Structures are given as C-alpha cells and as structure tokens.
Image (cartoon, rainbow, N blue to C red):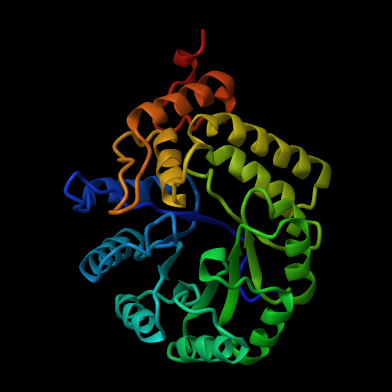
Length: 317
C-alpha cells in the first residue's frame, strides 16, 4: 500500500497585476473554485505556480492566504518549495510548517547535479527536519537529474516520510519502472503518462487540465482508478488530440510551464486570471489566448467547464 492516498492533484496558479503585485482576491477565488469543484488535493509553488520566481515576501503572503482558504476544511493542501540549497529550502519550509502545513513538495537543488551520496544527504537533511510532515518529490528534468524506481527504492528505506512523487516525463518505460520498483510511494503522473502507471496498479493524476475541464479530468482519473483500460486509453488519446488542437496556436517559441497553466485557468472560466508571469518569464498574449479559446469552445464544447456560467454554445455556429 502506498504511503499517500490516491488522488487528483491540482495546482493553484498565482495572479499578478501589471506591477507584479499579488492579486489577492483573484487568488482566493481560484482556490475557492478548485475546492468547489471537488478537488481536495491542491498545491502551490510548483513550476506552474512560479515557485522558482517568488521572493520571500511574496512566498510568505501567498502561503498565509492559502492557509486561510484551506484551513478547517476536509482538504489536503500542499506547499511546494524550489531552491538552490538545502538551507534555502528548509528556511521556506519552516515558514509554511509554522503556518500549520504538514504536506510539502520539494525538488532537488539544480545548480550542480547531485551524486548518489548528495542525493541521500539532501532528502535526509530536509525530510528529517520535519519528521511529522509528508514529502512529495517533484521529479523534473530542470533539476538535472531524473530519479528512477531504483533510486526511490533506496530512499524509501532511509526516508520514511517521503510519501509521493510527481513526474510528467519518462513515457511508458519511466512510468512502469516507478510502479514496479517503488510502489510504496504514490506516483502522480500527468494526463499523458497516468494511463501507463495505472496499468500496474494504484497511482495518481497530476491534472493540468483540471481548471479548464474538471469533468473530463475526473473521467480520466476514475477510469484509471478502476483500471478500465480500454476507456482509459481512449481518454488518453482524446486528451492528446484536444491538447494538440487547442494549444496548437501557441506552440511556437519557448514558454515556461506556467504560461500554459495560467491559460488553462482562464479557459476554465476564471476570466480575472491574468496571463502575466513574474519577470523575466513571458506569458501568452491576449490574442493568443483568444485563439486557443476559440478552438476549445468551437471544436470541443463538451470539454468546457460549465459551472462558472461559461457558455460554449455561443462560440459555435
């Protein structure tokens, strides 16, 4: 049995005004909508949430608001920390810990690639500092080292409060390796790889499309949870085609993950969410957003979230 419950994990993105000030009302509304849609496992400060870009003052204020909006509810909020050193990561973790959070997402320091000894030291130093907290490892290429099932196998025995991983890379072979060799951890896969993991047993969904299409997200997760493989891989193909078509107009040039994720929040009906990212990163333009919106609403009206008063029909002829 995995150390963490099977779930749909949803990121809450951070809205900035033209002066890069936090738009608190919009952020609160986003968290509230996510909860109202029935998603109980939500987090802040992955790449999509610009955890790499926020300064300490912004980090602390956003954590405070996130606590206010999730406290006392039957939800499982998670705070992510991205940093270049153990000390930097632990410092921010202490702030969130003192605010009452007990579930955290961490990634490897990326200035230099960690060797095997350094890898073990990092996880022990961070996780052992908070023995009553649970940790998810954000296993991403930007950390310059992707961990496989055998790496996690060694960490499982040494770090009892490492409970989960999050990965969107690796394809079928990567997913199967994680599931075969480190099944004690709850592995969160993106929409593309979730079906590959589900073939081997219990795993979880990192749901980038949850803000824009919560009902289709839940369909994909339920099919995987029940191991309804025909339905699962049909939905996987549907997600792939829809994503390719909808985001086709903007897949030119280089944009960091958060640019796409903020667009997905807007596509889900939260029109107040700005497309802006913290400097120096660039979000999409309003024109690009409208192009993607037209494709989604005209070609895939049954994918559009309907709970915020969005009417896909008005975009169809």
